[in-house]
Length: 434
Image 1 (cartoon, rainbow, N blue to C red):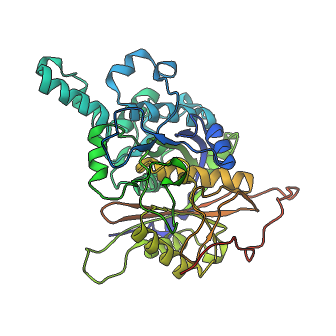
Image 2: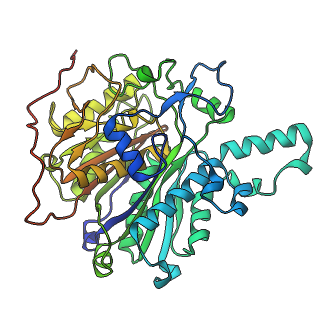
Image 3: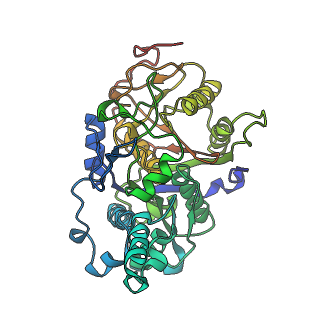
């Protein structure tokens, strides 16, 4: 499977005018971003359930999250924790965008989100009620609260968006695939799209599903547990959270005098890996090349790559090879800021996309924390790097062979803007090669 929008559709650029974040390192966009640049981790021992008997006992949990302080009481009985995070982030993104929703046609506004498993924590609780207490004790909201499409539905209902909507289920790649689908809707005439990814399964049921992949770290030290591309990498740390973006047509954002335009979703592509044992190469390189072509960019124009960085040795090797084949050895700075939060599945890729837009805004590459030595020919950024940024590439892969790539391009800078002095790309950080 290969997906790349037709070049003829480029006449209607889709730009990001609002960002909302709920992450283990902060329950707002700027709190998350400050923690990311400061290298403050959000990975810690699991507190939501007794994890002592499991091989993985760490998680990225959104801290001090009181849903009652952010949402109407009527929503609390009918929502899973991950839906509550999605609603809060969507509200923040819309406030950030400053769009007057009442002035827009409700049928021209839509929502596209991604999730991997839906409201697993809610579903597990209600199944336990059924098993131990009987059907009379099962919530009527179980009929939809567990469903992976519930975030799209709840956001659209709350904000009166009755236009083109949908949900994507491609595991971690879903956070980018949802944005790609939202961009398509903007190009087809939608006036505003709310999009992104959200996941959260910090409960025994969700834990069992993740342990079955064999990709979770067994380390107990939060500082050493998740090491993207690292020599000692042995898996990732699961996490909960999301990033929600507001997309608008560039001309509409300009006409209404949007407070800010973070950047354009300039290129997008999705591919699928061949079946195991086929002898055919993975699809990530093809996704990168298609996204660059869709955005009309050459590899040399990419200033930074926000990598998938699974922390699983085989997956890291495949991604490093794809990057080297496109950009050359040490050809582009690479970073994995979710090393601070853990892998948020559909929410993780959307959060990387938000981080890429913020990085372009502030001319700074956030660090990959936890990885001190790596085997691959990568310019892995492990400390904050100040450098002018214009174009970023965000990558994601989902379990099951999904690959996605999004190219974002920052808004044109005014002539009087003074960029931060660049760090020469030939000044490579110390690392260990094979």
